[in-house]
Structure formats: structure tokens, C-alpha cells
Image (cartoon, rainbow, N blue to C red; front, side, top):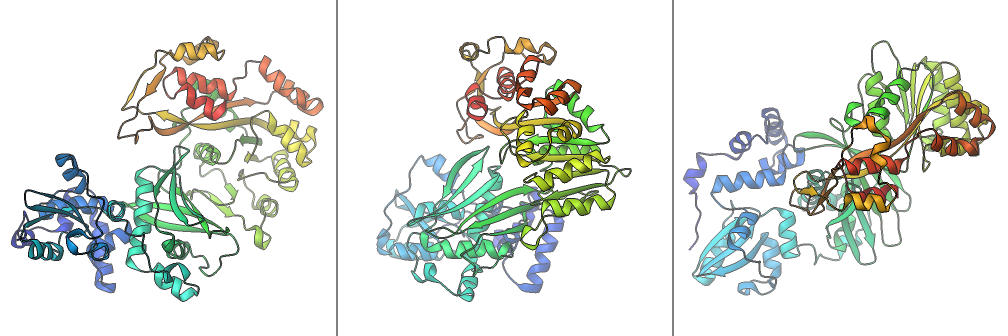
Length: 565
């Protein structure tokens, strides 16, 4: 016999959309858009909502659990404290393939009650089959697709033709199938929920895995079978408008989608390898991704220096740091302070990461001759007040930026160097004359990203002062009395909120200086002495800024040493 907590007549009085609206996870506008798509193109409401990014699979799972009066898999597992069985090949003489086809999994049998996990509690076919074979009661719990894959090993055994599909049409057919669409959507949803910055689809010999970068650290979240590689890669290429038949050359593209009702921009980069193509997806929140200057949460002295630099009508402000250190976010925070009807702002980027109203943004395309240098030269003829250069990579771009600064433009630019003082040496290595740099550069900032201590599980770290003393920073907070930094060193054990890491989110640490007359003389005559001069003039390096953050309890000493040590 079978059992549902809610009869179908009772279900008819409810509806999935009403529950989603009641729970606040679905907007009326999203529902209207989904209903319009169903009217025009057909499909099930759940699939359309997921495809449009109106809500997550977890949202729909919770709504269906409420609708049908069943428990979620996680709720059931917590209440029963049971681990699901691992061997399902011959469960109830039905075979693993049958369970795969039914998208269900036999959890356990207790007191003549068989518990199964399924992604679709509306369909009680599995319950009926088991009840008929065993004459026992069968109960369902609802599970999200990635949990089912973990339970069942859904993608472990895939027909070989999936991985061997060679022609573009075959790849396109695979990539547009519902299982692949749901898998890719699920991965993106899980990455967004984890507040990941990047998703890595990586190919090795016999292995295809998915990792996400959360707070700068890589974590594996899924390992679909190698047989699904071609279909998943092709799906992502289609979403990014890339050539699915091109596997020999790198490609770059962009995906614009909605996840849980929010707009999301995704930058896609493919790379060919000996084991197949790998892809990296950079997640860019088109709404909340850009901070204001106050949200950068600088110490007061750094904030004051930045505000004074941004009042300049001309000159170059350089932000340095490695890839992924938050340089672009900081530059756009600067721009947010400068945007206004009285100024014309133009950006030159590769790629344009944050699309911002009120700014003219230009995408570099080197493959067609649209380089940073060529675009920058044309920009100067557009009468801008402020120019943002995404990255100074070569002599021509550097010289054009200097020329722009010397002719009355405020230039914001990024540069790849280890610290702020090295910016001048790097530019001189590109071929820019030192006297031009001394005249044009008005300020330099270097930054890194450190993970923030989780607010839900952090506790006082009594060993913090001793660790700081051992590192030579026993009195470091006393060097900056105006910052009012107290000794509140913290440690975190990890909790469900931070996924056991002890950290949640990231924040920047900085070093910066405004170029004064003394520095200009040093830069133009003996630039190699700039670092020594800064050390003698009260300049606070990255590591010390990080140690101040550790003393304030914002992060840990070990994290500062990992990033800036």
C-alpha cells in the first residue's frame, strides 16, 4: 500500500505558485513571465521557474514538501539519524538502472515501512511498484537533484556515445536536454548560494569535476561522470554564445541569467587541455557587485587619503595587486563617488565586469585590433573628464595614460605588482620615463583580500597577542592611535553558516600613499629608494594593515599571513 500525508483532493485546493508567493521566494512579475512562457512554448511550471532563475530548486523543494505534506530528505535524515544504504544495485530486485530511470533512491526499511527519496513526489509510480512487490507501506521524502546524484551515483554509468559525440548537432542535442539544463542550473544556483566568485569545470584523465572558489579558497562540490563532460561543456558554450564545435582554441563569452530572482552576469573562459576542455565561470552580481567607497571599509586614514585623491582634476591613481584581489571593485567604488551629470566618465576594460549607468564603458577586443592603447587614444578624442583603464599591460597603454593625465584628465588604472612602491619600477620597466611618472602619478594603492571571521562562531583568541608579539607586532596597534583598534583577536571553530571553514565573506586590506614633492624627487632621480623613504615616513604596509584587522577581530593572524605574509 502507498501513503501520502495530503490527498490529491486536498492538493487541488493548494498550488505550488501560491506557496512560493507566500514564502516570499517568488515575485508576481516572475510568475507572470513564467506563465507567459508556458502559454507560448509549453513546459512545467517548476522547470520554467528554474530555467528563468526565478527561484531555486531548494525553494521549489520546500514548497512541494509543504504542498504534499512530506518531509525533505534533510529533515528526514535529521529526525531519523540514519544513513542511507549505499548498495542499491539489486535493491528489491529492481536494479540500479531502474532506480536511476525513476529518479528515486531506497533509503531504508523500518518496521515494514520502506522509505524512498525522490525528486518528484507528484508521481507515486515507484511507491506503487514497491508496494506491489513487497506488500509493505512505502513513504517518500523529497530530495534535490544534486543530493540524489550523490545518493545514486546518477552520472557514473553513462552511455559511451555521450562522451564521444563529435558533430555540432549531436553536442547541441545533448546540451539542450532537460537533465543537462537542470544540472548546469543547479551548479550555478549552489555557487551563488555559497557566495562563490568562480566556478571551475575541470578535466583530468578519467575525471571531470566541479569546484567553486569561496572567499578565495577552492572547494569541490560535484563530480559528474566523465561521460557528461561534452554535454556540460556544450551547454555552457551555448549559454555564452560560443562555438560549441571549437575545442582547439580558447574562447571567452558571457552569460546573463537570473538566479533566485536576481540578475547575474557570468564571464566564461574556455581552455583546451590534453584531457578535454576546462571552463572557468566568473560570477558578477550585476546589482550588488559594486561597492560604494564607504563599503570598502578602509581605516580612517586610508579613507581620507582616497577622498583627497579623488578630488583631483588630473593625474593617475594606480591600484595594484594580483588577479582576484578586488582591484576592479575598488575602482568602481571610486567611480561611484565621481559619477555625476557634470562629469563624463569613460572606462576601457577587458572585460567590462560591472555595467554601470551614467558611464560610457568600452570592451577591448584585441583580436580585431581594439587594444587598450588604441581604444585609449580614441577615448581622448571623446572629451572625457575621468578615464578608467582596466589594466596597464604595455608601454603604449602606459604612455597614453600618462599623456591623458598630463593633459588634464583624472585616470584610474590597475597594474599587476606585489606592492604599491613597485608600481613605478614596473612602469619604468615598460619604458615610461621616470620624470613623466613623477609628474603624472598622484597616488598608489595596493590591496589584498582576506577572509572575514564568521560572526556566528568566532570567539576570543587568547593567544592572539602572543602570536602578534612573536611576529614582531606586539605594539603595532599603538603605532596608529587614531584608528582606535583594540586587542580583540578572534578564532573560529566553524559552523553550518560558514560551512565549517570559520570564515564568511572577504574584506580588503590596503597600503597606499599620495605622492608628495619629496616622493616626486625620489621617483625622478632614485626610484629604487622609494620603499626605504616610505618605511621612514609612517607608511603602513599591507601586512601591518592586515594585523590591525586581526587585532580588531575582523580576521585571523593566520589568514593575514596566508595572504600578505
